Amino acid sequence: MMHCSHGWLLSLAILLALSIPHSQAILGNENKIKTAVFLSPKFVLGPGSVEDKYYYDVDFPRGHIFLKSFNGEVIDEAGNPIPLHETYLHHWVVARYYQRKGTEISNREGYRKLARPDYISVRNSGICQKNSLGQYFGLGSETRKTSTHIPDPYGIEIGDSKEIPEGFEEKWMLNVHAIDTRGVEDRLGCTECRCNLYNVTEDAYGRPLRPGYVGGLRCCYDHTQCKLRQGFEGARRSLYLRYTVKWVEWDSYILPVKIYIMDITDTWKRLNNSTGLSDEHDCRVEYDVESCSINGAVDGKCIDSKKLSLTMPIGGYVVYGVAHQHSGGISSTLYREDGQVICSSKALYGDGEEAGNEAGYIVGMSTCYPRPGSVKIANGETLILESNYSSSEHHTGVMALFYILVADETPKPLISLQNLVQTHEILTLSTFIWVAALLGLVIAVIAVRYRLSSGREDGYQIVM
Image (cartoon, rainbow, N blue to C red; front, side, top):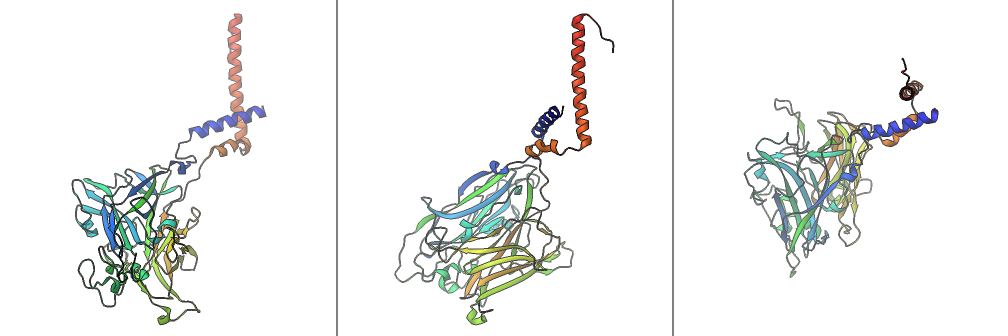
């Protein structure tokens, strides 16, 4: 009987496993990931020239889905990756927006077009405001060796028809900022957008540069030209940003995450008014690093270290973290007031010539993937953001951003076939007795039915 009971329990376990809804079993979601590779519109660069355009309604996966990763790189018309010492990828940014059906937007009209009534910017969850850093994804020179993968069972939810205003449709914008440094007089100076090398005195909107502004985004906008070496000539060439998107179809098993971007230049302040906002965050995005010959070395090292104390409006469980820095960057760390590290992201420099390993350039940033449920930020918790740059030389227009993905809940315990098969080893005595009794009842019914059948065949009627 014991052998029979165990066999019956094993059969029952298998039947239970087969009957479990798909979203509750071990999903093996990695096998369901879909991948698509797209190209940005073509842009043409000559030695020293700059591309900084906003492309609207770019190719992107559609429908109610969960994004799992996004990454990109600059390639030529033959599909060959372009090394950073030829074309420096200052940054690419991907933003989400809603557009009124029947309207159009030109790629030449600029990002401010999204503020008009026919276009609604769908920003990330914060914390920067004032039309700054609202993107869903964004990296720069480090793009080839920085992981953007979102682990199971998490994803960035998009395409939910209930969230899209009536009469609008969801679309995506791509901003590519690339600088051709072939033949330039000062390669680092061009990539750091030093104003004297671009010979500009006003920004892209015709506004005079503020006093003391010597380098940064305001000096290397679209169609500007960095200074070339005397007599250098080089061919113009057609380039693209090739971007790869991975996603999975919507499933109740997947937990949505929020995107938060923190900026070391944030000059935030608390508000006490009727706007509903408790904090105002003014992220300046870029800053300069002075040479240690001016500020002096710290403990014998030329390191510029900045710290920012800020509060998280809405907390949750940290799923992923990564920093974004420019040349000269060393590391960036997000930690609690008591010094406990939430995530530390370090710069990886190349040491060769080939694309993805260019010497002197940041070719990757390390990432953090905490064990699910192990790192939780409380609502309103104060955090410390720290950014470290080498100050052995002067740097202009550097950035120190920190991306984290946060989930409201942790994964629910999952049931696997293996666990179910093993249930007969952990059944309580009372449960085992109940199952055995049920099995005995089934056997008794079968026996009675057999005797009834046999009695009828012999011509006798059994009285119960």
